[in-house]
Amino acid sequence: MKPQIMCEIWRGSYLESAHSGIAVICDKNGEISHQWGDPNTLILPRSSAKMMQALPLIISGAEKEYLIGEDFLALACASHNAAEIHLSRVLSWLSHLGLNESDLRCGSQPSKDPHVKKEMREKGQSPCQIHNNCSGKHTGFLSVSRHLKAGPEYTDPDHPVQLMVMDVFQELTQNKVDGIVIDGCSAPNPAIPLYSLAKAMSWFATAHKRDDQLSKAALKLRNAMVNYPELVAGERRACTNLMKACEKKAILKTGAEGVFVAILPGLEKGIALKIFDGGTRASECAIASLLIQLGILNPNHPTALAYTHAPILNWRKIETGMMKASNSFKV
Image 1 (cartoon, rainbow, N blue to C red):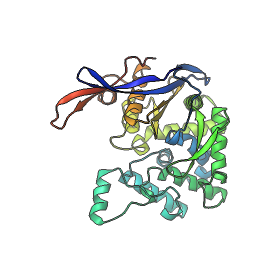
Image 2: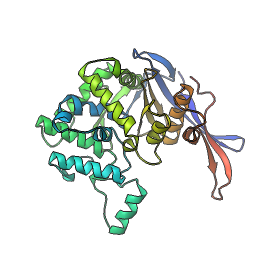
Image 3: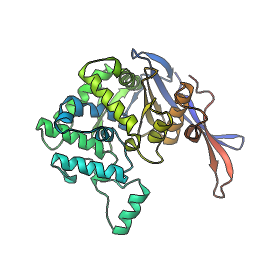
Image 4: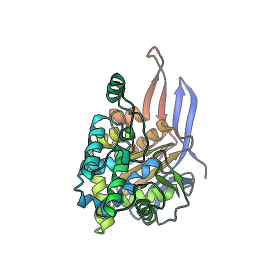
């Protein structure tokens, strides 16, 4: 099964570049309804798996013990810009736990927010772990670890927090984890077939139809993300922009190296895709294209056009080409 061209770069009337990838849509039963390329290809979900990594925050009892609000749940699933709305909440959450920045294990990362970057530059400040795009997820890990009275090295693969996360992965995918790598934020990340990731997203999409503890937790995370899309990523980010444009009909999460997932409760479907060259512009284009084709996103919405029919301008602001979803990428 050949990979599918999903995103094309045109200059004038010439196809200049093309991004290929694989994608899977799973139905309410976790079965494949649509596929492009080999659905059994092993991929690393990276940050697209944050909803699964956040489930122990609820099922462990930590959410209840520490009275964690819906905005913090959204932040636990986030790859945020480190804007003030993100930083203030992470600091507040850590303080509520009786912890501080040094308890995090995600590493320091510069903020992506221009206002925060400007202010830090003017004050001569350096980035810290609070600015890491995964600091919300890690504060969630710390909450679970503190609740379990486990040790401080919560990113170790054999730590009780990560063992809970891997149990969740295997239950949702009904597939044994092939292997584990270490992500950019130092948390373990499993290698799984793309189909398994799509299946997990379809499980999230049907969580409202079940009454078990894990499904109730998934519904809480779903609601948190659609109610606080700006906390999941931030300004000028596809996750936030597309969730707003879809008007609460889709829960979206990107992952590094060209991964994107979607949870579609109304259609009871889950989507997972991977761009082989790791291109973010292509994964954003591809997920937007699928959302349009499935009737979730208005094709004429400015956000839809920005990701699927984006003009390319030169330095003189002259339109020289177009980034567009491939016409051959059809549901």
